Amino acid sequence: LLGSAFAEEGELTDNQRISSKSLGYALQYRVYRPAGTSADDKLPTLYVTDGQGYLAQGGFKAVLDTAISNGEIEPVLVVFLDSRNPDKLEEDRRHSQFMCNSRFAEFFARELIPAISRQQPVGLSRDDRVILGLSFGGLNSACFGLMLSDGFSGIAMQSPASGDHLEVVRELYEESEPLPLKIFLSVGSRNDNTGAVKRFKKTLERKGYDLTYIKVTGEHNWENWSPLLDDVLITFFAKPEAK
Image (cartoon, rainbow, N blue to C red; front, side, top):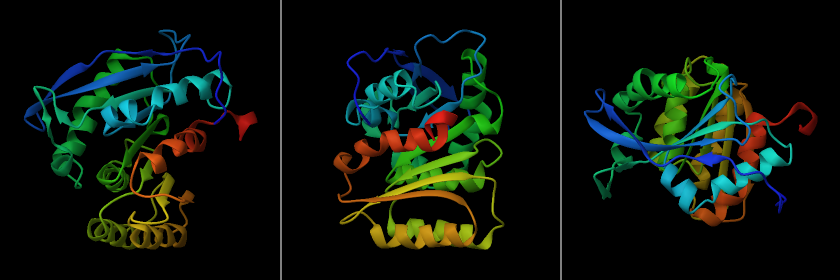
């Protein structure tokens, strides 16, 4: 993505707290709103697991500001969900939340999405929502494709892990009827669960999914993931003239 010295900056909120009955504990998230957003907008929404990492290590806000300012994508609202305990940040809950956890899916469906829909100028259709994650968060996106296809039309997976977990999910996709999903899938070329991801890719292709697949030279780290954020955004939110 070409940078722009004149990218118009969107607003990134401070941490917002939400107490989940489904999970039995509180979580926090931050919301990115594009510059020039009005209360009457019906923006598409990208939900990001491991949101704290995507902001701190992935530089996602700058990518958003540039892509929107350059007219490459439609303005999009982004919810960066923190996987950590907000009262004890050294406690990361991702290993329990991201394993096709039905309570985590219920939290999204019954609590987080309704809260964002009340508070923010977003579209209310499944066609307006995409879920993104990396590593175990990528696995979570795959799980949400099966568990919450009525809530999300797009799932984005960067280096979904681990091989054993992904194989179980791959088999579920193999056994199920194709769902109305648009899918982004990426993986590195070494030390990145490459074989399991390749098998998952072949299953998705065989089932006829609308799939964007990118394999990069890299490992299981931000040097792999960060450069692909513009590809994720363009896959789901490109302006018609930019496609």
